[in-house]
Length: 624
Image (cartoon, rainbow, N blue to C red):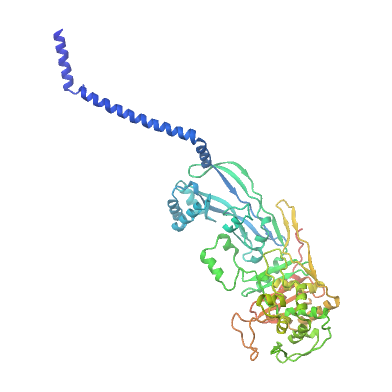
């Protein structure tokens, strides 16, 4: 037994010597290390449990909502705007699809990194793009439009590197397509992105940041019909913001179509007449007020506004002294010159200060106080009755008529013709022109009215200001027997389903209340102006034209040298107003050429072309 224990003890000693059995102190150290490790692991699991408890019980609802929000997106679907067509149904403005790149800001972790990647792919300025995205995030925007009208190559690059571009989406958006570049741009107008001021104004509750709306012309005036109703769809996206599927969809409703009264052929001819010049041409149907043409020059490119102007392009347009964005037909205010003699003739006859046979001698000058007023013909015209005074545009004759009438009656008849007030055309806001009076002068200049002021106003100079559309309407009132119609440029509005939402009706705003004898005498004199007087350049074969020339001085001429050429930009404005045929008027025209020279030489030939374009046009039935 002792021998066995001895063998066993030797065996144990031998195992220990080989390291198979730990000494007691080593075993204790290992046990303590294991206990500490187990304690740490238990603490970590405890913390994990507490975090899970916190997320599940205290923040469970919030985290669920955030999870759903990150997974499901509400995507806006803008409506396609209604088309704009001319009175024959030819499309002037339509729509086209545009591929736009937008960035959903909440999906972007690091804006500078994303901006750098996009800048390399699309050849953009990374700093500018970073600032754009950061500003959008500060403003609380959901997404920012980075680029419109992406090319196929650009879209291919974006799709290739999509995993590296979190929050980047390509969407299809409708954009305007102007079928006839530059034509009727001031009538049609253009679109622009809604401004912060408009959004905060509260008058456009259905609009969002990034929406486009009309800025001028038909696009602005008829925005509520053209815009349509927006739609939406809910989509499911992955971690990169890529669409996985559509959950539901509200289809957008397209806008209504606008049919204009414009005559395509007449509009083109009017714009061709003004090419290379600054001015305006208006053509109306004198029996209804329907607008046949509204041409303002110079024009501008609507496509440039559609794609988005650069800062340099916008500055160039704003600094352009020709003011291409100004619609001169409605907002150009000019002295009417001798075209105003039409108003003076009617007023003089109706107020019985003259008769058609009244003779007034023109000696070339008329002294009034300390000032001498001259006729455009230095040596004078001699004895003048109304007909000859109109035919030869004698200033002295109408100076005397004005002196007999007085400014109060001149002002009254100006307003009967619709001068000094906006016509109410269904487009942009108009400027009213000016029918001056003593009350106006005192309020404006704190000076009394003088007889010399009346003399100047009598021939369409001085404080007198009119717009081309006002003068077209005034001559139309002579043509149609005394009715002052409200002009209109929109014939009808039609829904996509074909329902008529609006149809224009001729509206007489006022009447001249002049006798038939007075109107006939003035009409005969206007025919004489074209046949025998200052507007022979407006004559047409087989068509009798009636009209009146006007030359509005920008600065006083040198009486000692009346043929001296004026400095550039100070030449006289050339006016001509007319209607035809004289015995059955179908078109009334007003032509204004800024710094053009003389009405008979520079404006009358343009009116002739416009009248001919309308009267020689094959008649096409209007769209019903």
